[in-house]
Length: 489
Image 1 (cartoon, rainbow, N blue to C red):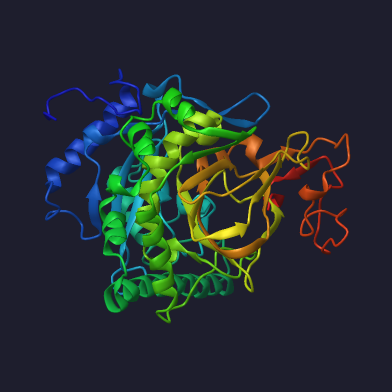
Image 2 (cartoon, helix red, strand yellow; image 1 turned 90 degrees about the vertical axis):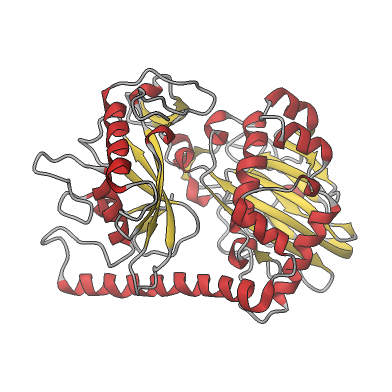
């Protein structure tokens, strides 16, 4: 971009926008920063590894709006020129600390910036004691007397101050407002900060040992994780044409998928080459002697792909494959964006995990791809959607097909039927939309009264009080009509 041009802002499918004063100020400040420090980073503070340029400012196609009752909802941003806006940066943690590595962050600037600070979100998996759900620092981070203080006596905030504060977040425990913490509390927070930092460093050391010392079985998977380039040979030809090369055309995507039942769809996804590579990589890792993190408390076998160095591969699949499909099939407030994921393999085999009790996922939208091997049984029983009538009524029994993917809302109740022969391995990606998770419909879910008895196939011994073998922790049906969404497990 010519530095003399007026600012234009990228906003999904929205073209250049007529911008108001706040975004002009943001554009001018970013341009000034790059002019002052240079684009080769040599003149930058050592902890700034990269920063968006002025022509890389993004508006938010969807935003969180408040209504008159104090409730929040995700809606299309009809006035994107009023903000919020986003930029990206990469910040280095404290030298010599357990956070001495690069962190990808997103800065979100409100419409009244610089009077209010940019909000910070860290991308990727991070162990940090002062991180909230949504990978955002705790509110104390933004306290005027804390780590992220105003830049000047006028009480406004600039970009470089924000970047320095993020660096400080990875350098030492947060600076707390005077008098807000006792010395004992401060020492305890410092201890927990060090503990979380050590855990984070250990995780990255394991990933490094596997790739650099043990050696990957299939380097192509890790090269894709680094480059975010997905070889078309890994994908079904129709999927590659419609989704990866089709610019996310919703009508074409809807024509490609098969509706297995209301709210659950399947489609041809990956080739045998990709399936075999992922399975062999997982087996190779588990034979390495390095620690194995299982997918969740319900599965004793399988492993988390994000923990062996394939988080970047799943990032690419999420943004290039799963997001376009989700936006074509599901409500916009849930599928407008994906911010994070929990990606893992499940493994079912006689003598190991046979199946999985009826449940819902800690996911906004779930993609479940069968990779192999050969098996009998091991279907997926699909019931209703939590928060809707008929949650415990049978809708469909899906038969897994190698290379084919099933997609549904995380709150769609389902269970893995017992395998009767062979082995089944599936790649599962739980996708998280943090904007949606801040909204009132997500936080508070109304459960309608059941008007007819549940189907036996849809009962859960883990969660349902009326199951013949219910666990003591079973909670459904609830004793009140409204529950917090964190009961959805």
